[in-house]
Image (tube, rainbow, N blue to C red; front, side, top):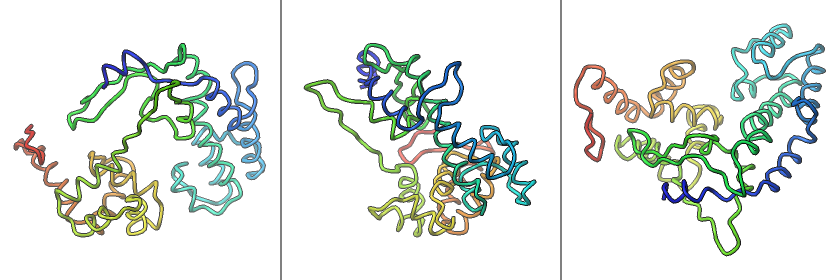
Amino acid sequence: IAAEMNRAGLPWRADVHRALLHDLLGERYAGGGEPRRLAELADEVSAAFGRRVRPDLPADVVKAFAQAGIKVTSTRRWELRSVDHPAVKPLLEYKKLYRIWVAHGWSWLQDWVRDGRFRPEFLAGGTVTGRWVTHGGGALQIPKVIRRAAVADPGWRLVVADADQMEPRVLAAISRDPGLMEVAGRESDLYQAVSERAFSGDRDRAKIAVLGAVYGQTSGDGLKNLAALRRRFPAAVAYVDEAARAGEEGRLVRTWLGRTC
């Protein structure tokens, strides 16, 4: 499948992509400056703080909150959502749209789409865990709203196969953690369920925590998130801890299916 996708490319409607960008970001300004909607949101953020603030610069935002008597350590969404300040709403909207503009905006379209095809390099089994990877264009991180530009050619149909939050469900099965197994057995959103148990309903933080535990994140907020998971899902975290400990001690580590390293 990867070879066929590399050869044929992914169908991509540039006109649909441009229309989406216009609806989300507004008109483009000459010289590559921020589009209209981002400029408006930046003005709203500055007005809320009472001085000019660059919302694209985390250090500037943290400093502005400090001057308003509010201590924040980052501009991550999960942290800002707990802050009671009029700058938070336009700031979160700015951050969301800014990522789209920088990562998958008009420049991305010009660089990666030719003759109705998006052409990154697709590589199956690109990691030791067997996951797909891509090279170029951020193909695995395209926002859902922008994916609407992926339109099948006439006479063809795009089929979506969703792994459905596979990693935490696999961890639940192999660790036999009762709490995580109960959550994973539901048809509802697993990350939302974890967030309600361990992260006060913050789904984004729960997702980062679960995937961070699975893939070994120990820096930044990783340790704090891991501690919250360990309290609620001790057997699952202990399973990951034991695998990490075995590797650190030079012992063989085996996956559930027998792959050994």
